[in-house]
Length: 347
Image 1 (tube, rainbow, N blue to C red):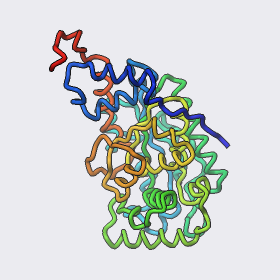
Image 2: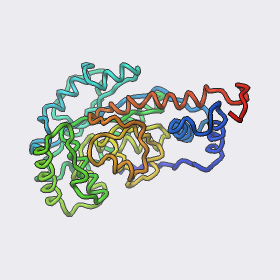
Image 3: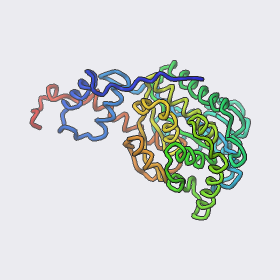
Image 4: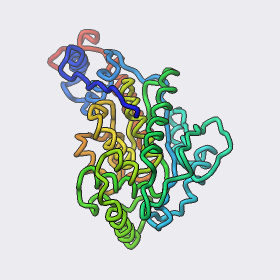
């Protein structure tokens, strides 16, 4: 099985002290740029540099179908997954608009959509199978399929890193995947299921109650599953497993990972269960409106950059947060020091 060698960031070493001194010596009151200062420090440590910068940033949306969607746990039919992938490829979705705004390249990864797409220059074909199984009756996928998905996610990241990319903005799309993420969150934290399950893409109150009942049945059917990899295989999705591999490989390669919303954050939780240091390489874009995300961010000791009540997925929040990364690195590398500006330190 693929393993990752992820080194934790040295937050007390010489480089950390040098970066903090550089930040503090800019022409501003100490700490006055708030979270931007923490972002600049973290990216400097990730890149092992006093002059960090984003190189060839890439937006990846991992897409897959979920067998449990047939049980009515979403406000939308399963066919919307393939339809939205087509929308991404045709340039018509929110993520396309935001990527164009910030001149970021978008890639759609077919991790397991229940459709065979024609070749497209922005489509990465990595399909394991045509969606997961219905968890009410069997595990979502076999452990071997889950491992394969993790490895394919890692391979995609390696390819981009070899092309000069050092920053990834990661998201997902798949009807039913908030249900899978909620089950993973419950199993990996032991929080009450009701605290982990939200309305997803727009369920009403009756739909939320139905979703909770169905997920409780899934948990009862698979009550014996506790080992983290088996939990991912039983309750997860192919896009979630590929995200786990992407986070692990990116962290090993010392790349910056901009994490989107609830589902993308649950994939980080899965990765961190085995590789806690993966969190050092993650910047959490936003706190979504999905129930459980705020508690999950606290659990991960993550401080999101934005809070806009988003619940769209598809890396939209990650792309919206990207200009803040740019601002953090630009102030670190271009803003004058007190000495350069001839400004008194008493400022």
